Amino acid sequence: MNAPLQPDLAARAARQAEVVAALGAVAPPHILLWQPEEVTPYECDGLSAYRRKPLVVVLPETEAQVAAVLKACHKLNVPVVARGAGTGLSGGALPNEDGVLLALARFNRIKRIDPIARTATAECGVRNLAISEAAAPHGLFYAPDPSSQIACTIGGNIAENSGGVHCLKYGLTVHNVLQVRGYTVEGEPLTLGGLACDCPGPDLLAAVIGSEGMLMVVTEVTVKLLPKPVLARCIMASFDDLRKAGDAVAAIIAAGIIPAGLEMMDQPMTVCESDGTPEEVEEEIGRMTEVLSRCGATKLKCSESEAERLRFWSGRKNAFPATGRISPDYYCMDGTIPRKRVADMLEAIQGMESKYGLRCVNVFHAGDGNLHPLILFDANQPGELHRAEEFGAEILETSVAMGGTVTGEHGVGFEKINAMCVQFSPEEREQFFAFRRAFDPGETLNPGKQIPTHARCAEYGKMHVRGGLLPFPNLPRF
Image 1 (tube, rainbow, N blue to C red):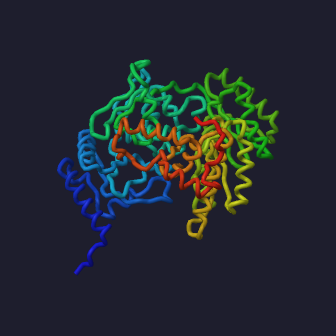
Image 2: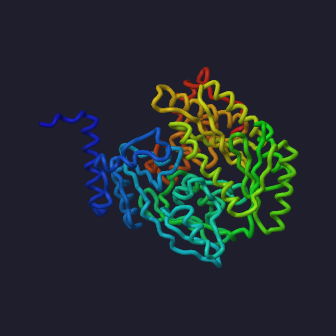
Image 3: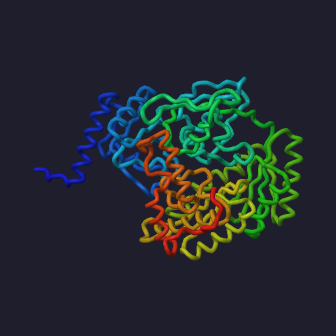
């Protein structure tokens, strides 16, 4: 005879049965998963330190199914978290234990490539890189290129306002999207933006991009395409000093040069790219070489072929997986600082390494000050994950103290929600909630993410700051 379930487990089982029955009435059974072994693969995104099993996973195949599922969940007041490829690094797709995970990977068709208008329309589950591959025969490409572009989806890029190594020149996701289509929390269709140069009314498209799935469920995206540059060349510069490398980044921008890409890696190394016509590239490469030499570069190597340029970028694009070879685990942060403070931050992180007894590998988008320090730890060693979290929290607080922000492109999600208490005042956070409630009054779309409650901030302040006050009280707020 089976032992009776504990009260909380019994309540969860009853709720799960209720939700499965409601969804089964509006969706075919083969798109519903609820057995433990079925939902386990969906218990986290790329931030695997935090895991939760959802009540139900739904894998819709049509927009009608998305609408029906949202309507059923809204009627039962069931939280819904939308998920793309699960490559996010801030816990944005972390499921709600009492909710439904809406996995949209089957929305993977590119609907249109318009070479005349230079646009692509794709379903939300299309991979970032697949858009550029489809546009390539027309001499076009999609500019935002996160390091995970081989796997991440355009819908996930919308949620997090993703960037990439070329965002310095070509902009983030928000600068390259024309229109999104999808559904409200009530399952009603919603289209924001348009194919014209401007649209009437408030720019709600920009508000949805980067909203981390809290305002609507996006199912289709129309993006801008750009002509592929005639030529692109890279400079790889080496420095014998952190401050020289950091100051070189600011010096390039101060010289009026906006490279196609400007990245930094440990040892320390800077990668600069120029693209355009051969004449433009030759002039810009010459100017960048002059600035880097003046800033103390000990070695400069310029790509002489497309194969060599791709080899330079391969080192940067594969920095994250390469780090996995030197440490059992790593924790990737995502603060952003003014370019002039890059060297200061690198030196501050060196001090934190000693403070927390953990190594840190620095890889980041230097051109726009978007840091991606990789804190190395071993989750099997007691206390190391906690120290890594404390290390990361101090990096984010230091970013704010230096005039920056707690995220650049990975989003806030679950990971950085405490850090939002540092950057924004209670009044500002309440405005965030008020705006969210205009779209989702019950706050059931991706709840518990991005915007911290007053209680959470009070608790975080007590844990981290003397007297219950948050740091930098006199800092001008956004």
